[in-house]
Length: 229
Figure 1 (cartoon, rainbow, N blue to C red):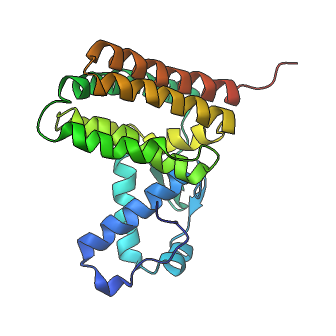
Figure 2 (cartoon, helix red, strand yellow):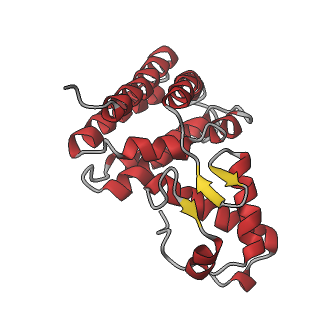
């Protein structure tokens, strides 16, 4: 995963549209990794100095991020990373349960088609060898695991739909609970999902994925809840 603090290639090496893509993805990854926290203001001047792109490129990237509800454009105050209410977070998790459960089912049904098994195995070999104590690597592998399943599901609209669910915001909240024990549990759940997909068991793949996302929801809200007196 690219480091959000690392300077990007000089702006002149990119066409404008490509530059906007790069800035958009850099900020998006910054939200996922915790570089930019919910509610944090994104100052164009600071970002221009940090990543080396023009104000117009940043403004256009901000508009794209706002369209995906990852940032808020605040009149006379600039741009801030979106902050979700508990109800919004709950609703998004519930939608993820349904969509990612269906993705796992479809991936299991299609595992024998074309080079799907080869693609899945290449991903899984990388993910399963990861060190659960390395948070940055785990975040990267977690993204890879889920995105590969969505790709293999074969539904052309599904990746777009999931991208619109403010996953980076949820990922930031989830990072707050990311202990070694949590990453090991998550990795064990990944293994159950992977086994069901590779064995072509759609029902089990869907159930395992739904449980995986539902547990992430419970743990997130347990962490966010105020301590009991």
